[in-house]
Image (cartoon, one colour):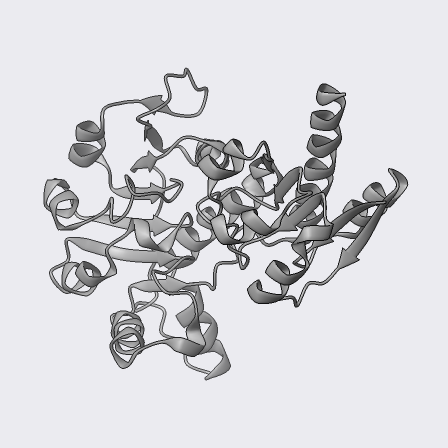
Length: 312
């Protein structure tokens, strides 16, 4: 009997597709790490999102496991080297939510530029603060994209109708793009007025945006991060906003995303950033649309069976 363990909320297309291939699916979206470790020995497929750590301890117990299937992109929660050593295929589906992330990044930026959250509240308060809510236009600005994988490309494509100059930097990619010009990191630091991060998280990208990076930015600029929270050193943001080196901040991701376990200092930072009226936050939902839920599941399903056919 072939078995698959699904540990997070997923579109039913994945369950139905696995069942059609004679897999018995255990759909346990509320399961926790210890429970997965206790059950994993019986399963050939493990489907995860972001809460389950596929570390050596878990993999040592996964005696039948053939596939780890990650809904989305980030693989930092998987011990890739050990999985490879064990002959376990790791599959992800970053294409599934790239459009959602691209749209969300653009939505954050436009909302910040046009003071939409505050303007919305003004209307609810029956207060017409038209001059205070005067907006900023995106047209004519230079946008720098750091990381030009699935979401970086999607963001550039969404920007293409806004008459901006779009530059991108990617250390591991040499590619012609219809929507952005590839340049050195130094050129982005010299010219960008909007900076958007689309990097995977690993030891190389930890605090990629730090004080050194900030000081190398020649112009005051707006910062967007929809990738991973630890790519940005959040300790430098408040001072940068007060000094107007940073003109505005759009964050969908944070260094700590367990809001129930925030320290006093972490809570204070969020509150102080908000008080500048130059920030817009969302709770890591950039890739979280009804459409992406389906696409993530369908792509993952297709890749699992493509890999199975290749091995047959």
